[in-house]
Image 1 (spheres, rainbow over the protein chains, first blue to last red):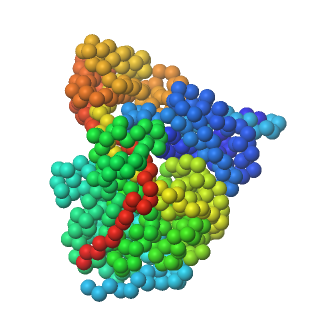
Image 2 (image 1 turned 90 degrees about the vertical axis):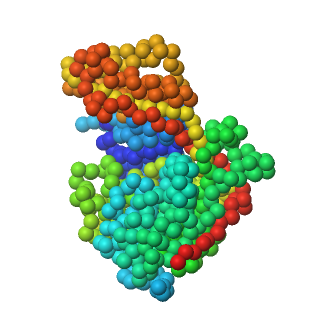
Length: 108
Length: 460
């Protein structure tokens, strides 16, 4: 069954220079393996398309049922240099929640 | 005055628990938060984090204009407001409000609150030592790009080493009511009272990591008590009176995140998880001057209403280097906006953008970057945003940046004319020309830890 990521996870995003970080957290720990399977760095990078110029790194926090993504070269230079309204990537987390993922369960 | 002995924390939780609150997540955070933290319930230590990466450069400029400035100017009047409640020594303040002029900050605090003893941590400012470091062969390459510091040498405006918790604990040991630092890490503000009160050693890596993570959780103020939280945000109680965070720390490194009972907001593991992941890099290697904390060791339990217990934290040895926060001049920028209304609001906004770019090119003005986004359409989410056919209104926001201030200034005159000489229905120009702002960029680099020697000075 395919659902938007927002059905099973929440997120918070922020900045480190020109790198945006997105923490994605499963509401229910049982969905953590789905996050690990579905949210590959490649998929996250292609989802954001032209917004992310560098690589996407992924780190696992099974203790929190969470993944942490680093999106490099994603904030138009970052901090004070960037001309974007969201120079700190505050809204990137919400954007990612639109991504459609496969729960791997048969729909009724 | 005679200072009461340092027994803060003995009141409600007993000697084994100390209550550490954060009342300021950045310079510009809610002015009432620290006052409410003191008035609405018991706390022992009030941490106030004033410094973002670029704040130091702003303060450096202020100091260049007036040598008595260069610190967070909101801080002394705040201490003036809460001084009466601090006189008995039960609540002590730890703040990195000193910026590039911590002594001047301390003197201003003494003026605002003459009865209080103030301790200042010095030694983080290395603005005058860059050439010395270069001569010693330290590359100080930018940690993001790897470029050598020579690239920006003559444009550097400030340089400070991130200071950890131990110099702050040393300042607390003087019995001061207020501890002022320059560029201390955000997490050190909360870790310092634990080091001071629990007598943690500089090699208690697990405990130092626990205190560091406690600091990370509360360093952004209400972001761990329901602010900026996606989970069930509509039902987070009474955000008008949101409570700022309190850590109840125990000597073994476990702690509870909570807030005063009478306040709004919510403390729950979902909320704490969001904050744990905020601005996080590699979770196994959260590097500070005090230790390397492992975020994959954190265990959270919801143990009661607005109470999250945090335990199990592991840490490792601190690195042999300290990080420098360097700011440097990097050109000029300006961004301006116009609003177009239905119908064809987006088409009009796009046409306006094209016209502005054409006129800039016609003037022979070139920039490092011209960037346009359309509020109501794609400003936040770019290509990820869902299309909205014929929106009721669109704000076009055009920004330019470059080394030539005159070119950027000329750009600021190219938006308002479109109200008369561009697509129909433009409005939202009431604020006039947008300002030209200097870009002060941030550079981080490493030097050996032994280069940075801190000291503590006591006033009053």
